Amino acid sequence: MALILGLSAAYLVILLLLWSLQERITFPAPRAALPDPQAVLGYGERIELVMKDGTRLVGWYLPPAASATAVLPTAAMLWFYGNGETIGAIWPVIRDFRPPSAALMVVDYPGYGASGGRATEAGIYEAGALAYQALASHAGVDPKRIYVYGRSLGSAVATRTAADYPAAGLILESPFTSAREMAARTYRIFPLFLVRLKLDNLGTIRRVHCPVLAFHGTADRLVPMDMGRRVAEAAPGPKEFVMIEGAGHNETYEIGWKAYRDKLAQFVR
Image 1 (cartoon, rainbow, N blue to C red):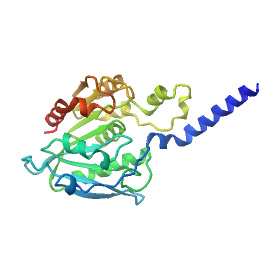
Image 2 (cartoon, rainbow, N blue to C red):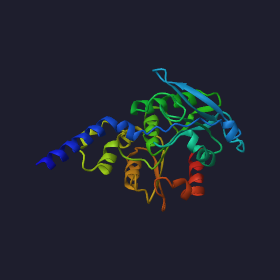
Image 3 (cartoon, helix red, strand yellow):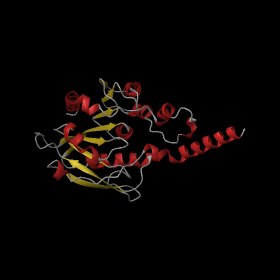
Image 4 (spheres, one colour):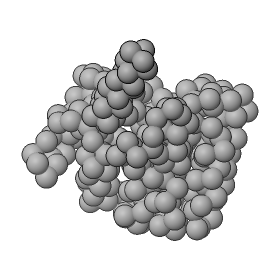
């Protein structure tokens, strides 16, 4: 009897922790300095955005790559990264995979990288909206040719942004269906009513009417490929689902490499 009571108490404590800490689990918010784009890329500028509560976000605006010949105003891309990333960590990926003929904007989410504040679901959506508005109002950008890209957690920000604002295209990498379905997969012994976060790609993408391009690794054990396929298929407009053979959740760039990069550049034009 004492053992049963002890196990029950431990289970309740874990439930309480999952309830109270789920945002910290979902948004680990690593900190990192914001690199100077001029120093690491040879072009670009640091930007700063301000949220409604005064929180300051930092990021990059990159014109078309120095080697590209773009006609102004140019197409542009918003880049939203995964939950354990920062600009400081992924800038080589941006350098190697960005469509060269398009401008690009990337912002550290609240609490991430060198941005202030604390990461919340509402906060990352607000960051996405601010980034879109800043990019659309930039003098060198054609607001009718803004493409939105999101990887993993960033797929929720990208999908929400493309649902709320005009987008020329939406690119998703390793998208999940929703926070609740991810919790059901990861924490099977705990009740789903504890999940307060929505992060509902499957529901939100039904409001996205631009073309959708989705990438997913066939060996992704964190976010099953079936989730990515379901998200892509739920889009009401044109869509294409690209499988990256043998790629796990964090291997899509490495394994996809040239085929991935060329497909992305072809879509963003």
